[in-house]
Length: 359
Image (cartoon, rainbow, N blue to C red; front, side, top):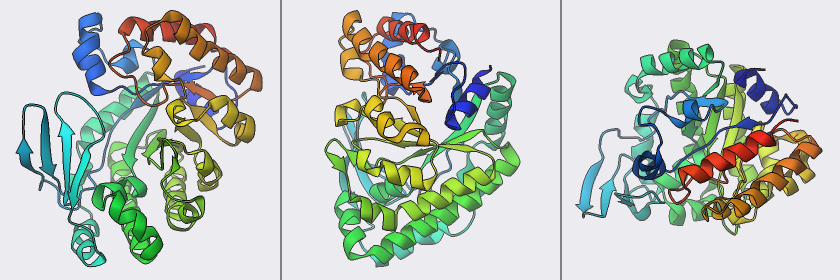
């Protein structure tokens, strides 16, 4: 069975020959650390570690005013930028992390009217390098890998444009504003991805990045999610599925109370199920079975000790239980591989997976 065939079976909530595998990394893990530990400079993880999935672009630009980004303040350690959403963010220069929200222009419905206007028309400049996306898709098919595109959607875009302190209260006090925001971006995605799929080609799947949770639970109640967010998620998932794609949801934090909504929206797979936020793939799969496939939940905290016993204790019991339960599963961390996990430790984790990945 090829990687592409295996992933399609897993995302169809069925059981193939063995479990799938994919991974995300913090940029500095390979760039600043693993390169000095023997990672080949001319390789990428997808090919070096023989992952089943491969990202092929093309990240459609969702900023209302593209190219408007400007540096507000800068030091050797961090930079403050104001972007094309009107959001001012402070980010580290030499390490990854969530940006500090410094301020937002879109704090009222009236201001949103100004920012929504550029999103109503198709702008081909938002599509990135279409030819490169086409080449990437062709290479993925040639290598029998499952190809995917990816992007954020409405919850992430609300956070990035309005900020938590504005959009979360608005969900209760100004729901029509939230609905308009979501509808504008749903239409925006449909218009732009229609062009991209027509000219670059259709990937096998799509990764939707939506962080609905933090370490104590969801950012809003499931009932609020069901009313204001899920209808648009459902329509976008349906749009992609009309093209024959399978759809994976990335959502950080403790998203356990949202899983019925995730199933309702039509997602095929849930990723990454953060252990650090209380998620456990065995417990989740015990409750929901094959209503979903599952990717992730390998806790990076024990892996970061670089102690083989702790690594094995985290990985092997989960794989054995998931196999026994006949659960469609992809090996992946519970978010991304951080730089304090050595290349040798990650290779050991992969070896443990290879020994225990057959159904």
